[in-house]
Length: 217
Image (cartoon, rainbow, N blue to C red; front, side, top):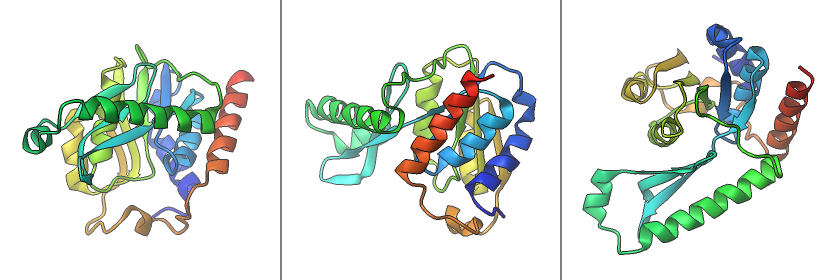
């Protein structure tokens, strides 16, 4: 369906052209979402920023998410109340995990963006982008976290995702733009000819390019 993430981003930008000229910001989930988001931000002529999400796992079962911390000017803790009720984490566990998650988010933001501050989301159209969705758990936390920062419109935009995951996420955003919903789905990478891992160096370079052309416009 897609040659690579840049091709996917170019196609996605075409489906989002109604946002050109609006006060929008593209929020890309690293690392794979950044090349996709770069093409969209360039086509729409809007800022590109990262949306860093860190899972908080159940004690001794880290793969099961109690919740997640979502980056931004006001980082947000999003908890899964059903898992919280079943797991009953000990007193102080969430607070400790939150501090660790925020520290890791800050480390990654500095790695990718040096001292650049997060782009303000409040009052803007926030376009949340990844290279695809599988279960949708991370994206659900991401959308809920962004929503709490009060964008006037929240848009989910991905090249490919299972139809069931998209249906579940529609209630979390104002608009869902998904180019392909193949069945059977298998995995995100199976719908790309080139799905090589996006490197840290590529992320840094793309963010620098995005800042440079924003300054020149």
